[in-house]
Amino acid sequence: MTAIHVVSTARRPVEKASEIPSWEMGGQLLKQAMAKAGLESVDAVYASSMMSGELEGQMHLASLIADEAGQSGAEAMDIAAVSASGAAAIRAAYLAIKSGEVRSVAVVGVERMSAADAGPVLRKALHAVREADQTMVLKNASAFALYLQRYGVAYESFANFAINAHRNGARNPLALFQKEIDQDKVLEARVIAEPLRLYDCSPVCDGGACIILSRADFKSGPVKLTASACATDRFILEDRLEPLDFLAARKSFLKACETSGRKSADFKFFEVHDAFNIMACLCLEACGFAEKGQGFRLAESEDIFPEGDLPIATMGGLKARGHPIGATALYQAAEIFAQLTETAGQNQLPGDKIGPALMQSIGGAGTTLFTHFFEPA
Ligand code: COA
Image (cartoon, rainbow, N blue to C red; front, side):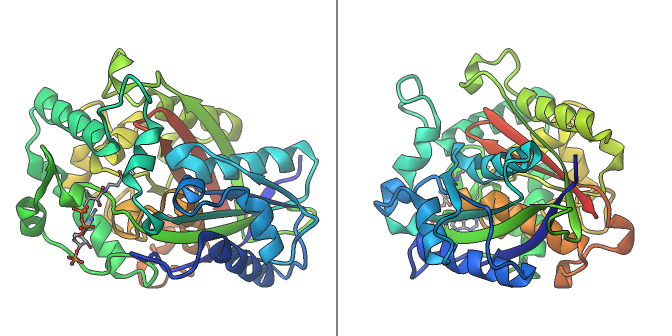
């Protein structure tokens, strides 16, 4: 099987409120990515958005985006897995190209959370009946409380997750938050749901990003997508034997390792799903970068900083670049592309970090996990 390459990417600035609808964002991004790749057409357009149907009254996005970009005639599908929708679309593209059915796929992720009240839609990632009184914020607050209590960890031990993300966001012109924060700011921030404070959470925002994947023998690019895997856990966090063990993160990571021959020690940096800092910590543990109950130490020791052993959220992550849900995984992938092509501007990692990169994307409260590996072609 020929390799799968990322041939080009396009990203919009993440905004509090976009003036244009998500399908227009998608059409513009698709045109930009095709122009950068020197492609006049793509075989397929896969689109991801969790909310356009409910907040903008628009479903059937992929075909509309294809049309906006002059690509009517292409195969087009909407792909979804709530907050991991973008990663699900990347995986669908990976499988389609691997099967030999298509040669090139543009994966377009868009979200306009400002279009109406996103809260009621976000909670639909949870069980409609058994978790009717819950939200994503409350689920993560309870996991965070359990972690702090079980492992006897002080709240401030997590501060560097937010400090690192905001520092990297401050250097990324496309990030929603472009200012650095210090430990006092984190500790003094308002409580959102005990023990979660403001800087433990990602924001509600708008954005869009696109990557074009291709069979290398059809169109080659500078970055390879070397593995794609998905795994699930028990749907409801409290139904799991061990709620602090992100089993789906570990399973999808191990599946990707199996197919690519990679192991934890090979990875130079990690675009982690830091929708909440506790999620980043549990993913670090699940992928074997820290023992159970020790993931926060990688933040405390500054190992997750750009100069550290395992930089994470190198362009601000979900926390500071922003988490426009259906677009998020496309930002993560495009940011990895920027790092690996040494076009990450002020956030560029040093040369010894240009190597295998890991990306994880989470649907729901650790329920559906996607792992993707990239490396220079
Ligand atoms: N981090 C840092 N600052 C934030 C922020 C965040 N997550 N969310 C909002 N702010 C800032 C805003 O920029 C604004 O600053 P300004 O006054 O300087 O303009 C200020 O806080 C008030 O913003 P507002 O939107 O009114 O905040 P809020 O209290 O309504 O929302 C949260 C804060 C944390 C509740 C909200 O961002 C949230 O719900 N986040 C989680 C979203 C989620 O569940 N995503 C899915 C995860 S899978």
